[in-house]
Amino acid sequence: MSVGADAPQREVRLEGGDNFRDLGGYPVPPRGRVRWRQLFRSGSLHRLSPADVALLRDELGVRLVVDLRSRWEHEAAPGVLGAAGVEVVEAPLRVADRDAAEAALSAGDLAAYYAQLLTDSTAIVADVVARIADADGAAVVHCAAGKDRTGVVAAVLLGTLGVPDEHVVADYALTESTRAVTLRRLGATAAYRERMAALPEAALRAHPETMHELLARLRAQHGSVDGYLRAAGLDPSVPARLRERLVEPLAEQEV
Image (cartoon, rainbow, N blue to C red; front, side):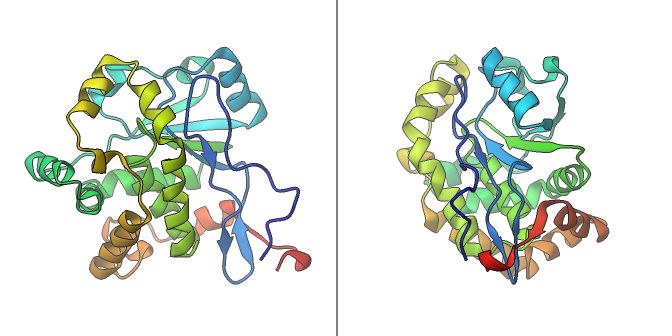
C-alpha cells in the first residue's frame, strides 16, 4: 500500500513547538486510510510564535485543541491558541493512585503508567473521542512532551479508526526522534525542568515495546479499543462518526 509521492509531510515544523505531527495517512484495512490534515498530535503549545498560530489556525484549519495537561501546567505554561479564537478543551488525564503512578514512572515502567492512565481517565478519554468525532475542522491533541498522555490518547484514536497496531506503535516511537529538542525546550520552563529532573532516563524515552505492551494490556482487559470505550459508557454511534469523519477510501492505484 503506497501513500503516494504527493502525500503531505507528517511532521509540521514550528518555531515555538516540537513533536507536532499529522496522524493522517495511516492505513485502515481493508481499503482505507486516515485523512491527512484533520488530526494532529503535539507537545506543549505554550511557546508558539505568531507565525505558528497563523500556520495552525489559517493554513491547517485547526479549530479544536484538546489539552491533556494538568491544572499546574496550565498555570505554569498557558497556551496561546485560545486567544487566537481556537476552541481549547482542557481534558487533564489523571491517575487515582498517585503513589502507584510515581512508582511505575520511577521504575521506568511506562506501560504500567499508561495502563493506569487509561483505567483512571476512561471518562475523559471517551469525551476526547466524542469531541474529535464532532469537531468542525482539524483537531490537535497535546500534553507537555507529546509522548505519554498524548501517546495514550493517540493510540485510542488510531485504534478506534481501525489503524493496525504496528502503525500505532510506529507512530508512538516517532517521538523518540524529537526527544532531545523537546526536552530542551520544556527545560526552559522551570516547572517542567524540575519535573523532568525527578524522572529516570527510561521514563523519558519512547520505545516501541512500551506501546506494544500497552495495547496488549488494553486488549486483555477489554478485548479491543472499542471495548474499552464501550466500558467507559461512550455512545456506540461515536466511534462510527469518528471513522466517517476521519477515514477515507483509497484510490484504486493506491491499494
